[in-house]
Length: 322
Image 1 (cartoon, one colour):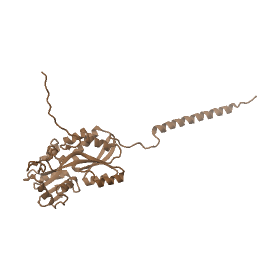
Image 2 (cartoon, rainbow, N blue to C red):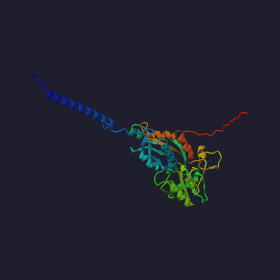
Image 3 (cartoon, rainbow, N blue to C red):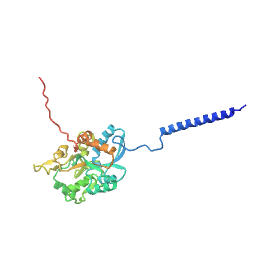
């Protein structure tokens, strides 16, 4: 009788079962690997509506940019924009670093800077004007002199007239650069020009010293609805500056949205964004937000002059049918 090897058949069956079990576990393992990832790093690139970036802002624009960021973050909760407020010169230094995506300052890029960034980055940063601000001369409420010509300011800043002038920073802020370029035409400040830590300290110093004059950005004291700025204005006065473009001679203007819009207040300056982004990321999203209706309305509500959109009040008549 031929022995078919029943015992051997049992061994083969066991081997087949082991093989099937091995294949099943292999398939299950591959499934779990595919679910948990292959070790590839997740995509951390930001988009216009989500992600995290760093920006630097000239300290003289702090109040209005804080409002812009507050509304932007509430509208796009998946975004995080870390902001640091510092002097204009420090903002430009930050722009050279990889960590800073955008700066907000009072000037655009020069041709030389444009060329340098083109060579270093292989693309040109975008920049443009978002709004118009003003450098405001402030004096103590007890001060006897609150009306100045540009010649008066030139005499004060050059040291010819011995009145202590207080600036909004110890480094090269946009206010310092603007006054040196526009009023002194590049000449140095006199020894009577002193520096404070920031714009808020300028207001505090002037509120306690009737014999001084200070210079801050309009967004620090121009909002007549902001409780903190209302409190500031109870301590200081905004000086009137001679209008150099007005047909009427001897006309002096206070810094306001209206006087900036009509070119009456002479110490006007732009508020620029400079964006270092080669694709459409969160920096582009924030820039677009500030450039479109909601962002421009925030500038208008902060009593600056929007540069991207014109908001005009029109008088309308409604005819009531009989």
